Length: 333
Ligand SMILES: NC(=O)c1ccc[n+]([C@@H]2O[C@H](COP(=O)([O-])OP(=O)(O)OC[C@H]3O[C@@H](n4cnc5c(N)ncnc54)[C@H](O)[C@@H]3O)[C@@H](O)[C@H]2O)c1
Ligand SMILES: O=c1ccn([C@@H]2O[C@H](COP(=O)(O)OP(=O)(O)O[C@H]3O[C@H](CO)[C@H](O)[C@H](O)[C@H]3O)[C@@H](O)[C@H]2O)c(=O)[nH]1
Image 1 (tube, rainbow, N blue to C red):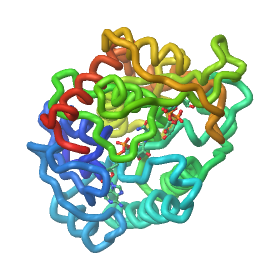
Image 2 (spheres, rainbow, N blue to C red):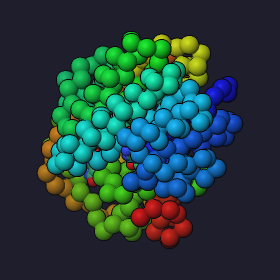
Image 3 (cartoon, rainbow, N blue to C red):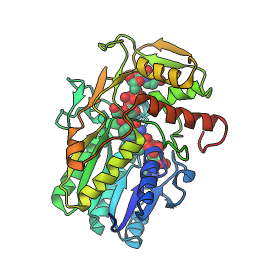
Image 4 (tube, rainbow, N blue to C red):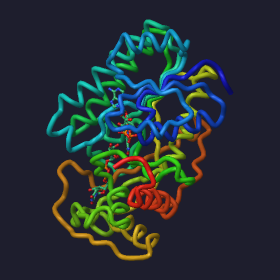
């Protein structure tokens, strides 16, 4: 299905670049707006890349006009949770204020469809390990709060004008494109699978398990890890849904089951074929014991069927990317 050009903010980043590639593969016309603060031009070869900021309203206005944009996919954000605790205004500035500016431009230009990268961090520390979209939102860090505020703006704007949106609440995104052309090179990444694969590829000496006394089967934190290509597919399905007249909706994106930190490390060692250096340390502040998506709504509403629900496959693709980085054969640091 094709109609109208698509603006992808943050398209040169980890998740955005996987979505851009799927869009291009099905013949969509894509314009990427990215300031390359954590993204890479090499990640969007084949797409039109405009290096600039989502907060630059004059630039966004020009792009929306010149490319007759009717759909926006908004990935651009700062994403490092601990940094958001130390420097909250950086997060409210980029993730909330710039989203407000972008939405204002979208309203002015009559953009019809908006797909927003939200996060399971909006749930904070939920009472139940399983989150539906109706689980109360109560973020415990500025990153989650900055995203929830954007969700609220979108909800209210969608009620006030013709723009319709899908807010996708990603759980723990991991893995890279199986062909190894693009991957996760986000600087200062703190995410478990990336960190563990950095150790396995010799790019980092050791890693730490943050807490071994959680009320989980092996005492370590449990998360719902979703392969980035399945997540990317959910975006294409969300676009089709909006183009088909679908109402605004918020959807969890996860597989519906979790793995502990220990299980993830076991998988990394199994796939790598050798042990990695791991030390146990204290809990990381603000980490819930368990966070698992109920994602039935995404499956029903979008007709989304994940293809890569396999921890070893997720780890394998991540590890291959880290090995390419270690060999100086991939973009990034
Ligand atoms: N990685 C995860 O596990 C995860 C989980 C939940 C939600 N998300 C969300 O998904 C989105 C993408 O995350 P990612 O992991 O790909 O991170 P990333 O850092 O790789 O991508 C973000 C991209 O946005 C760009 N960018 C940032 N601010 C910008 C601005 N003001 N103007 C233009 N470009 C800007 C960066 O250069 C980068 O290319 C983010 O909105 C993030 O909050 C990610
Ligand atoms: O070096 C590490 C890194 C992580 N962990 C543990 O591994 C689990 C996963 O941690 P990640 O940092 O990989 O991911 P989070 O669950 O903290 O958060 C991620 O997923 C959230 C949604 O659940 C948000 O979207 C957020 O943006 C993103 O960082 C947690 O139990 C954490 O304590 C370790 O033990 N050692």
